[in-house]
Image (tube, rainbow, N blue to C red; front, side, top):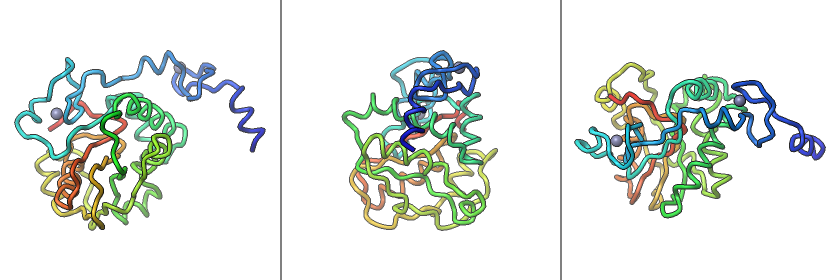
Amino acid sequence: MANLSWLDSVLPRVCVECELHTYTDLDLCPHCTAALPWNHFACTKCALPLPAQGHECIRCVKDLPPFTAAFAPLIYQPPVSNWVHAMKFSGHPVYTNILATLTTRYLQERIFDCRPDVLIPVPLSRRRLIRRGHNQALLLAHPLARTLCIPLTAGLVVRNRHTMPQQGLTRTVRLRNLRDVFEVTEAPPAHVAIVDDVMTTTATTTEIARTLLQAGAGRVDVWVAARATLSR
Ligand SMILES: [Zn+2]
Ligand SMILES: [Zn+2]
């Protein structure tokens, strides 16, 4: 193993996008890293991509979400959406590592004064976990917890019933479907960060945050690798 890790450090990696050799600690070359759909200007509450910095999106102004801040380094567009898909459905280790590393670097520059006490991956239902074999939110949360030295508690929030896939539904319908789906198993610490692969309508994170605050948490943040542009 020692020889393998030594070889790993001196041999070039192959960029997953352009397939050229790269001498970085990531399977993504600096050029392709720079060309990613970075979420440069995001809503300060829900991380929705915006045309300029320093604003909240219209929906957050009208209807403040229960979480305090959301962090999403990337916009959910190709190639990021393809990587998220590969992590979600096959637990692809290379794409998981790229997404986790880019998310960690982004957070390291932004959480000086808002480090959470614990990370909570968005739970899957038991049925979906058995069918898929892994929880993509947990795959992402593990390396974040390890690198940022923040405890990870996968069992603090559980999903107490199965819900049908929510794709294509409006946020209002999603929220209605998710009512009382999540349960907090013990008193949460003061500051919690919910971790997920991608945030689309905020319905899931809104419902988990609401449940955690009801259970006694003082602040809930949301950490995701990618944020979808459309938010209904
Ligand atoms: Zn490249
Ligand atoms: Zn917003």
